[in-house]
Image 1 (cartoon, rainbow, N blue to C red):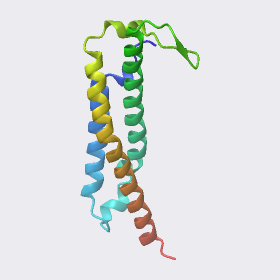
Image 2 (image 1 turned 90 degrees about the vertical axis):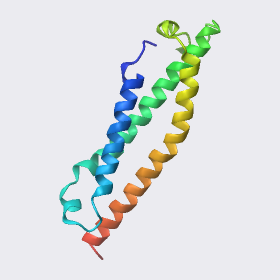
Image 3 (image 1 turned 30 degrees about the vertical axis):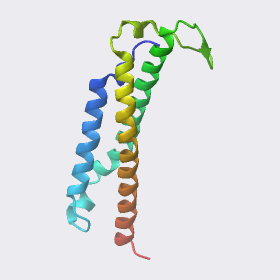
Image 4 (image 1 turned 30 degrees about the horizontal axis):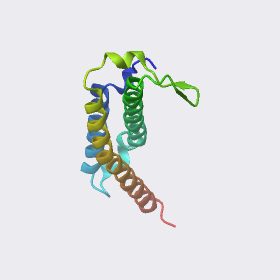
Length: 133
């Protein structure tokens, strides 16, 4: 696997900041205000940003795990994927990076899903306020 640009730490940080900023923007719109009904762009972006953020984390973790396996020089394949990543051998401190990213992902993943759950709940609530039975 060639080192993917979309999972570099700086990209993950930027997508996380976008997700946080979008969440904050949605949170500042008080339920029932006129603005919340007019400004749908941040709300429509949140699920896609979450998906991109989770994919970036997973891609980076996969790449870092392949590095650890490649250092064993096993030459094995899993599901037809070569576990040896030549680009990974150029990295320094990969195991530390992997451990840190795994910890960060373990903390952020539930927060991301909780944010989405809350977002979906309020979206449904607002829909029922706008269109009561």
